[in-house]
Image (cartoon, rainbow, N blue to C red; front, side):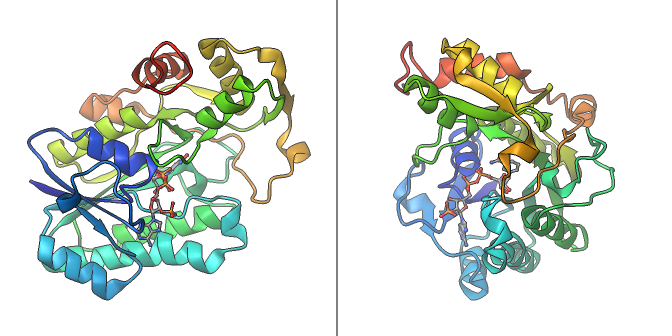
Amino acid sequence: MKILVTGCYGLLGQTVCERAPKSFLVYGVDIHEGNIVLPDDKYFSLDLTDRKKTLELLQDLKPDYIINSAAYTDVDGAETERELCWKINVDLVENLIYGARKIKAGIGHISTDYIFDGKSGPYAEDAHPNPIGYYGRSKLAAENALIGSSVDYFIARTMVLYGMSKNGKTNFVTWLIAQLTNQRPVKIVNDQYGNTTLADELAEGIWTLIKSGYSGILNIAGREIINRYEFAVRIAEVFGFDRDLITAVTTAEFNQPAPRPLNSGLIVDKALNELNIVLSDVVEGLHKFKSIYYSGSLVPG
Ligand SMILES: NC(=O)c1ccc[n+]([C@@H]2O[C@H](COP(=O)([O-])OP(=O)(O)OC[C@H]3O[C@@H](n4cnc5c(N)ncnc54)[C@H](OP(=O)(O)O)[C@@H]3O)[C@@H](O)[C@H]2O)c1
C-alpha cells in the first residue's frame, strides 16, 4: 500500500513516517523545503493549500491512503490569523478530499479535543462538538468536510501531543524540560484537564487504523486524564528536576489569547474495545519518552 503523509516536517507527521511498518511504501509532503525523515526521492515540498498543485501531486503519486497531519496548530495565533488558519485547516483538507475522490484514495485525518467546549468532558466520539476558539472551529469544519464527503476516511482525535521533533519546534514537555534544566521558574495552569499523548504511541495507533481499514471517528490519546500543572509536576519527577520551580495558576490568571476547553479529555474506550489500541498513562508515557529520546542525560539521544 502506498501512503502519503502530509505535514511530515511536523511532530506527528515525522513520527508517523518513522514508525511506518515496513510493508508500506511511505511518501511525505510538507510546505518546508528541508526534508528530515524520508529519503529525498520520497519527499515533496509543496503548499497543500494550492489546489492545482495538490491535485497534480496526488494524480502523479496515486497513494492508496493519505494521512493528513498538516495543520495550522497555533491555538492563540488562530484568533488573529483567522484567514491563514482556515486556509490550512479547512481549505487544505477540501483540496485533499477533491484529489482523493479523483484517485479513489482514503484519508486519515487528525483532529482535536478543541472541537469541544470543555464544560462536560471527557468526551466520547459521538459527543456534541461546540468549539470555543477559532482553531477548534476550523478543525471541526475539516471534520465535517470529511464526514460529508464520499471519500473513505477516518478521523483520529487526540490531545496534548508531545514527543521529540527533529525540526527543533518545542512542545509542552520539551519546553518544560528546557525551562527546568535552566532552573527557570514556570507558572502552569491547574484547571485545564485532558489526556497527554506521546506522539510515538499515537503514530502506532494511526498505523493500526490503516492496517485494519478503520472508517469513522476514533479517540486516540493517553489513557489518563490530568491537569496541566500535575502533568508538569510528573515531568519534573520523571526527569529529576526541582518541582518547586513549578507554580500553579488558574487559566483566568494566565490570560491566554484563545479560550481553552477546561474540563476536556477524550474517552479512549472505543479504541481499546474495537482495535486493542491502548496508550500509556501519564508516567508510563513520560518514561517511555525518556527512554527513547534521552540516553541517560538530558541531551536527546
Ligand atoms: N500538537 C498538539 O498538541 C495536538 C493536539 C491535538 C491535535 N493535534 C493535531 O495533530 C496534527 C499534527 O499536529 P503537530 O503538532 O504534529 O503539528 P505541527 O508540528 O505543526 O506539524 C504540521 C506541519 O504541517 C505543515 N504545514 C502547515 N501548512 C502547510 C501547508 N499549507 N502545506 C503543507 N504543509 C503545511 C507545518 O508547517 P509549519 O510548521 O511551517 O506551519 C508543519 O510542518 C494536526 O492536525 C493537529 O491539529 C495536535
